[in-house]
Amino acid sequence: MNAVSDTSATRTTAEWQAADSAHYLHPFTDFKSLASKGSRVITRADNIYLWDSEGEKILDAMSGLWCVNVGYGQQALIDAATAQLKQLPFYNSFFQTATPPAIELAELLAEVTPPQFKHVFFSGSGSEGNDTVVRMVRRYWDLMGQPERSVIISRHNAYHGSTMAGASLGGMSYMHAQGGLPIPGIVHIQQPFWYVHGHGKSRDEFGLEAAGWLEAKILELGADKVAAFIGEPVQGAGGVIVPPATYWPEIQRICDQYGILLVSDEVICGFGRTGNWWGCETMGFRPDLMTFAKGVTSGYIPLGGVMVGNRIARVMIDQGGEFEHGYTYSGHPVACAVALANIRLIQREGLVDKVRNDTGPYLAEHFKALAEHPLIGEAQSIGLMGALQIVKDKATHECFDSALEVGMICRGHCFANGLIMRAVGDRMIIAPPLVITRQQIDEMVGLIRFCLDATLRDLQQRGLT
Ligand SMILES: *Cc1c(COP(=O)(O)O)cnc(C)c1O
View 1 (cartoon, rainbow, N blue to C red):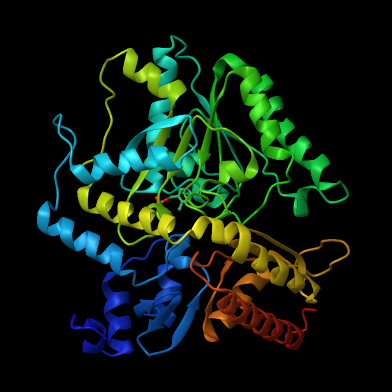
View 2: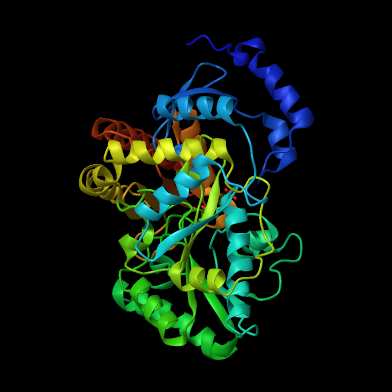
């Protein structure tokens, strides 16, 4: 270890856990159940590996939380933060002021995004970015003289964050159930999840049908009431659901036909995850707005934002009038400095091409083989994100009773065996750092297979298979 003092060594695991459950309310957590077993305390990391307070090494197949795309311990990012902290740790952009890192990052984002994007609005996270989307979409239609166009259409099982607007745009029913969501003016259509909703149809046929649900909803509401459609190119937290190839081009056609703004939530798919810089490039559509966060700094420091397409930016700029919206940390100079170092590293190392041409196809080949496992009904991957659907019956696509929490059983075996894989219901998902090597993919897939075998034995012992 380096000269930085290692605070993890100052207490035992049990002491950390006691203080944790005494004071720390974790996000998306059942506080009572966690207190009964105690957190796993993560103390350090390098490349694609984490270590906990017991000294156990773990392969992080989730890039932290979909964000540590360049892996842990990248000196260029650490140096960029340190230098900016010394030079100018904070200044805002409210008072007709700006800082060099924020300006340079805006310029670089315009370079690495599709050609319709020349402007950016910064936020502190993906959720805030989507709050900005709601504000901006409605501001745009106001300026266009069509204020009654205010409804935003999203999808069930989408994830767009956890603020009031983010959770409302999202389609998680368990989130809506707490706190009276969604807020008014946000409606949802069904997701393009072929394995569950499209059984018996070809993928392409189902993709067109699923896109058609958008058109049906527009006609039901009246096109003159609809402001925008928002979607993740590939649903992430919903379970890495890769839509059929026919889906997004048809969504684009429908949005064009009715003049509706198209918003791509690129918080996970952006910055190379799917093998192109942006998920919309992989899936073949041309959004008016793109939300980003997570991979913009590889999670080293919080930052998010919205890329604003020319269609909207021109109206907002040319018509004048203040946009009454912003965050204290919009364009935070340290976060922007880290983002600049992160994006330059991605460019220098050719990480996006590597995912598209090398590690993505390599993962796909090895991942596909996991579909032969007795528990796995479907193995899907795109770029460096993938999902394994655990099923009871491969022929009928029948799933296990959700009360059995088979995904959580599998996740438990992963956690106990040095692998972080996430469970979304009975879908086991991965999104490893983009720096992962072929050899490390072999290691990861080997661990996954081992954990699936352990899960199968466990289920057999419980008499569930
Ligand atoms: C994580 C995520 C968000 C929310 O980002 P936060 O930084 O957690 O607020 C929004 N959209 C998608 C697609 C995400 O995966």
